[in-house]
Image 1: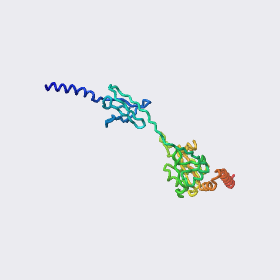
Image 2: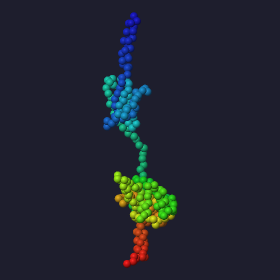
Image 3: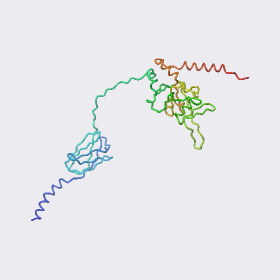
Image 4: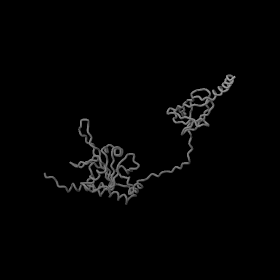
Length: 288
């Protein structure tokens, strides 16, 4: 009799157990372009059970037929899927979630004129005037140094001795003429010394190859040291060795007082030419 009761119990329980047993559900989650989506959260609806997709978008978890899986991921809309009775591999596609933006107000930015830039020059220590226009350290795509003339100490033969303290790779050769190198000496495969190209100078809009040793530290308002890309992009091949831009206090004060006028250095150039001509006329002539 007991055996008969046991048989009846098993006859009722086994079908119920087979219907509620969990199956392993696996599949892959992709976007609309069939690219895999990693770290997708998969949750069995109404429970705390779930899983996540791997880097290739694959997932695997145990679930019963007709249970609901909720797929969600940042940037994508959530998606609910009913687990089928068959054990087929699932392919889930998530669509990008459209984000509604708040109202955006666009303001037209007024381009600064040369007059506006020169008006900022006294307070904006990132501005440097060159023969190629005004250079702004903050907005330049290349990094470079700007040294205030107040930081230059009037010691040594000229201002270059003080300027060397701000650039460790800077080298000054004074014999037979003053030359400045912003790159270190290089050695070839045969251990021979390769002299780097020397730096040029841009003094108040005048480009010169010789060092302006006639200037003292007290004459300088600010100095910019342009190396590599910063120099080549602005001065071309002539700036391969670097460019030292110098703004003197004299021209700076001139710009302050005549900020509404267009800066023109032709008068200064003519004055310098006359000075050189007078010096050549007064120079003693060599004996015959």
